[in-house]
Image (cartoon, rainbow, N blue to C red; front, top):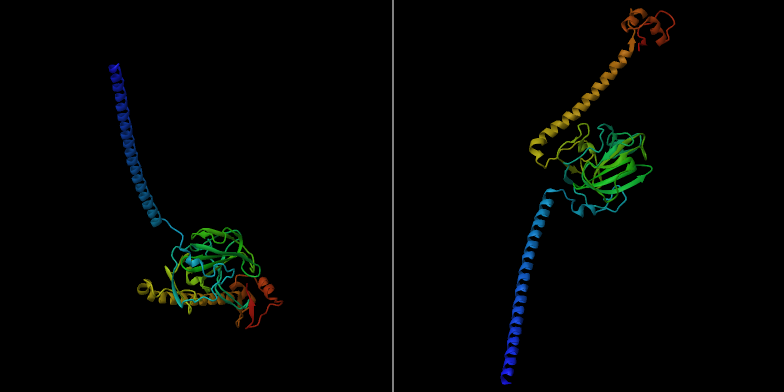
Length: 336
């Protein structure tokens, strides 16, 4: 009996020992799994950090090499105004160097049909230039920037767009037939913004184009050479004393040493060529008038005059209403 009890006790002790060791083994296995999972988690976090650093590097490279929109501070003053000049109470500097690189001529045509300045016939100032175009021609943004206004003015610009640019300029495009952009839209230089037309106070299809700095309407031909479809220089110096003039070279940039003297000579040559051209035109017109008439000299007769001007006597008489065959000296006859 005693032996049987001892045997049962041994079995119970063995079971207890096995249970205890099993529990310890289970606990040890759980700790090991936890440590392994923890290590894996740390490894994954390290890879995530590496990925984040790669993404940051890629974003930095993208920001460095890709064009981004400008800071919004230039789109604050007068931005919500519906006036062409929203700077009426602004403190405008006397001079300002303006970067005019990265430009696009606003329309394919390069003919200026009406220049900047006072128009005696209309008793008002023309604050831009008119560029030849047909209804429906594409109008392009002259510089990159944002659309400040799209509007219709029946007695003036008709349908018009105003863009405010990163270089501080505003450009105005008038007499349009259709808008291709909306207010607050960002556009790049050369992007289509409208179609030209003949709306508003217009005598025929054309694009009215203005360049303005803080409300001052600069003569566009001070910045652009429309005939050659380029700018005169890479920068334009706005000045309250000369913004109405047709050309101006920057005296305070890198062009000062190389172009200040040449700009003066260029300006003189330009003005001289205009005078020369005007003089030639006047002389040519005078010669044309002389060739279309003939002043009768002493000893002339109708046959001689007709032969000298490649016509018959009958034609000469009909052109001048001559009935007889005689003509007096000093009389001016039409020969064309």
